[in-house]
Amino acid sequence: MDSSVFFLLILSFFCLTLTSCVYGSVGDRSEAFRNCLSQCFWRKCPAKAAPQSTIDLPNDDWSRNQPWYLKLLVWECEDECKYSCMWEVVEIFQKNDRAVPQFYGKWPFVRLFGIQEPASALFSVFNGLAHFFMLQKIVQRVPRDAPTYRLWYSYALISMNAWFWSAVFHTRDFPFTEKMDYFGALAGVLFSFYTFILRMIGSDQAWKWLVPGAACLTFFVYHVHYLAFVHFDYGYNMLANVTVGILNSVGWLVFCVVKRNGRSWRDMAPCALSVLFVDCLMLLELLDFPPFLWTFDAHSLWHFGTIPVTFVWYK
Image 1: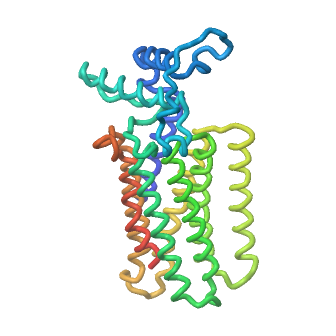
Image 2: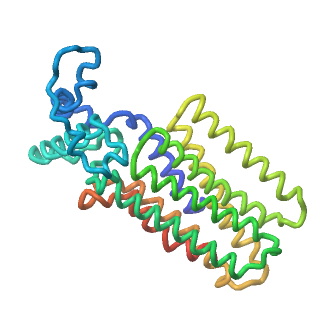
């Protein structure tokens, strides 16, 4: 079995086991957290504490002193309570020599100007800029009548879109931004797989563009429709992404061997090394650990590692 397939299969199993605890974790299920939330809601969020009550509840008018950037990123009263109580519970756990807990399926992060996961958000922006930079190189150096000019131009745009929504999602986690992050990620990997197919079968005839393109588009539309309008299933979404990722990874490695055509391995090295390096970076998702400095977790390091790969890949 190819090592990349082995790593991705392990990752798929790991991610699927996580789906059972997405809606609740040790931290937010703890009694200390629930008590803290109740008290905070009573003090700051009267509508949340007793929405139907006519009793004059205490309220310190938190919104009056809320910084503009928190308002801009829609940090509501309930969100502020969850954030402050999260750190109270983390302190309690540490004082009792207990492991740092997760909250709602995520590690505790120190927000920066209202950004929930600043490192992942920043590295997502850098990834998007890397694709933008290489898109400019394509426009400058590749003739517009080249057979695959439109293909790689589209690939860069779709990748930029994926990293844009990744940055937005890590800035503020809402149901909409979460879905757009997942959909953008799948679109990027699926289009990379489509690109692989065209590189394998050629692009000299219209049917070679249309048939695999229609198949990929049909699957993507079904995937988005099912998750957005039928049932948002974390397990199915992860399984779909990992499956396409495996096909994409193995496919490009096969391409490096089959399409060598007498060229030196040095010519094929950027493609093969990019794929293998990304597969190795996948292991970071297995090394799930509390964020260093409450900022850098395994997921953010995964985003950081893919930045230089982008420049190698486009070669």
